[in-house]
Length: 469
Image (cartoon, rainbow, N blue to C red; front, side):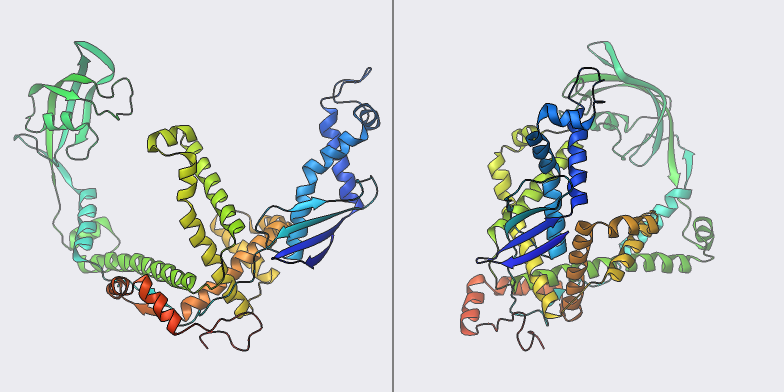
């Protein structure tokens, strides 16, 4: 596919696209296949008539319309990928001659593209570095969890308490009538786990083995079984067994029983190491996130409204898909939240503006550092991700690398990722306390006054030196 790019005013471009004859023929064949399924001609079974006769019956214009409807947008996306532009709105597409089988097809597309962004600085920014300190209670909690895995359950003669393991028979009824799912025998439960409704669990507390008791309950209004929600019931409960957990001593023998270590000291060191690894990963994530927040504040370009609206549309689609996955309609969600659809969408604007600002700021850094992503780098990324996901790396590379749209998307994502790596590597660490103090002391008004007194040096591609050097 041949594509020519022409820059226009107001961040708009024009693409002049030549679609190969083979692609045009494929579009016609596809359109005829789809249309022939709904056409019945005398002497032929439905969907089996020759394509030439189908063309005569429905008319050439209908076939052209079908072909363009299903393929024009794909041709446009390929042209966008090949030209390397980044549209922020829907295009205006036109053509002078209709597509003809066996011939190339030409069309033009005008669209607004993302402006070249600028930042005041991108080196020496700040990020919050949370300390990596493992609290003793976290270690003790993990050791206790391990104790529970090998704890013994010993029968006791006393009344049941929170934390005990009990075995009960129960039979529930409403107004003297048993209800579905309301009875059970030899049912084991640990008091305090929250597996029973609160009224019933409270009724079990204080019972001894062999004791029988009627427990009155009121099911919660949000109880999953709708026929029980908010209803009153009575449970005839027989306590069959009460056992308490006996935790093993925290010693070397315990360490051997729950791990590959020979001593408790070695086990504690391993637990501490695993906590430190998790905390370090979280600390790195917070630092990276807060550095990106600081970078977004350095953006000096205006946010294109079309780009913000596009991001809001993506967020809306994601929300609808999430609701659908939970079996909820948008109308149900609006009723539960008491909001209108317009209010829901409007509430997404701050998040959308923040995401757009971060992307634009990262693009400015990528331009400043002349970051280029090669096909080899993309292939290595695909192989790494597919291996981690249990996919066949060779198949994923062959499929994704052959799609220009996917290839362009991956190239953009990796470029911004490398830009963020550079910003993070050159950022300064501040503690959470320092960040909180600065937030309290540095008001927006003070920031505006400081900016007016010391206007930033704006860097744009082509300047002699990028900021922060």
